[in-house]
Image (cartoon, rainbow, N blue to C red):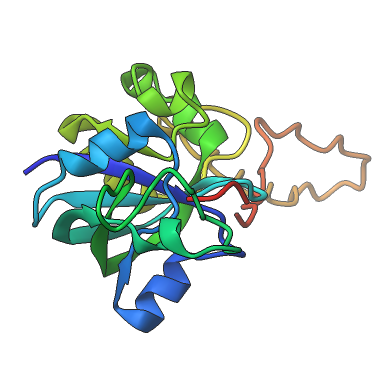
Length: 205
């Protein structure tokens, strides 16, 4: 099975919308390259559902191809957002696939975090930012799912953050027990305790 990434603006159609309806035809693709990628999809292929034109944009969930490419009827609907007079029922120009909801990710993995991972440097997502359907290396796919299971990283790459050891709290100093009253200097403590703060994390399809 192959792996893919498909983009949708969340205010148009989000992973939550797909979870509600279960299965949805992926209409409205009007890029020949994206169309050709959909024509290469097979039933059972897994897809990263990407929220585009959002703040932040990122991978939000997973879906699965359940029907392979067939004519996109939205191209024939005059006055519709995806109408294309060049495409007819007799000679359809555009294709679509049906996808089924699989899962929401534990958290959205934002684009900036993806770009910070050296192992993901070759993703088409970074070099073809406007392409709404694109293949994904299975190793990249698996890595992104693992990233989604980790807490979001603040102020650095996940690799760098994983090497940081938590600071041990210092022990309180005991008061002196001298019989004769005299002024004592407080002992200097080594290290400081720190607190981490975790931040919470439209083009047509």
